[in-house]
Length: 299
Image (cartoon, rainbow, N blue to C red; front, side):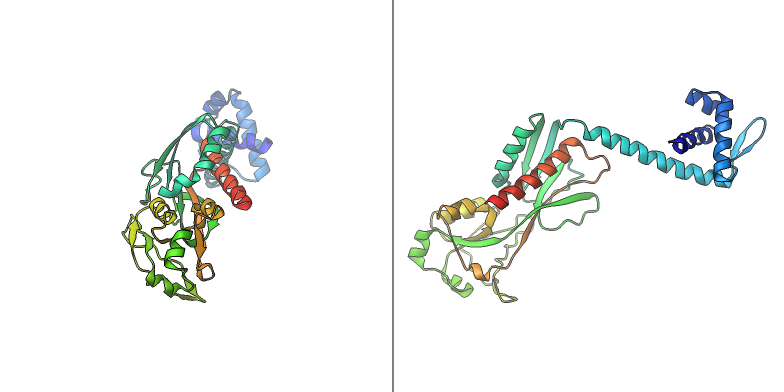
């Protein structure tokens, strides 16, 4: 603390260009500033100022110390603000972008609202690629990788896909035992709204991809219609397991071709990079990561 105090005196004197002005800023006498600088020079073994009766000027060593001192106090200031923010209760408007399947995250979002009643959630559901920073989102939940250096990221969990259909559909059309059997089935496929391409069904025989010739009976830019139609016996679809876990547990949908599935998707939350992450964003990120991990373990 004595070193920091001495560096602060030096910093004030260097930036003011005057011991008298530094003393005024610090609320001490000019002689106290001069003595503090002299003690610091003695400790460092070098002169920091060229002195005359009318002015002071930094030496080369003093200029170097000034640059380092500014960095030190900037870090101290940032750390102080972070500690202050960490003590604040999360509150205010929190603008979140979620994929269209984000409706399936509503139990977690509802739990967050109960835990943090002072946070107002503003939810935007879209599958397009949003610009987190430019569009003013506090956080974005998405699948896949993140390469934007302006963003911080945290993985919420991994998920697998399942090819599923209703029992009545398989009673009528038969069960596909190998990927090639899908040629005779009504396949309900997901189309990426960002580029119009169909999402590949992750079917593999060993390391060889065999999901490239899946027929198309219907396409949709979001998963809910695919799940709805599959439940009603309109065909088979391939969707993330976490989106249909309740239907599988209730035997409304039956998984097929599971030995051929080879995929591990990643669900991530990203937010703008900043040294001072606001309490509401930090609380949301931590809560969602913990809640989804617990839900996955107990599912």
